[in-house]
Length: 173
Image (cartoon, rainbow, N blue to C red):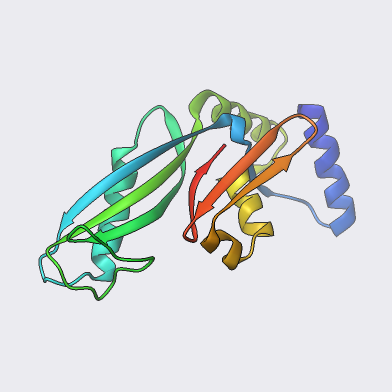
């Protein structure tokens, strides 16, 4: 793997005429774990604010900590007082904001191996993302995600998928 990465980096550097210093890691679906999390937040002011939304997402990120690297914390759906609140609940009146969150994580041993490989090649890891999520965002239009779609990425060694409903990523692997 190290030799292959070094050859690819050298080819990329020749193409752009510059030295690569940092890379983004796209973690393949096989190395991902997903978890759906529900978060309830009491609304102090009686109306949903941007801070309330951020607090729900932060609580969801904390709830899914464990022996893996967090890649994404994505809101799947919102409710205010048990009623659907669409994609953006900000400004809606109520007493309780509920978020359904999809947390996508990379399995720790695999992630550590990727980091080590990248460092051995003299590069810095600038960030990581789930490969199926990145592929879905690259090839799907908003209408497809809104209506519901399963994106399947068939590769030489593996097949990844991303499932979207109501405009939100709801599963991937």
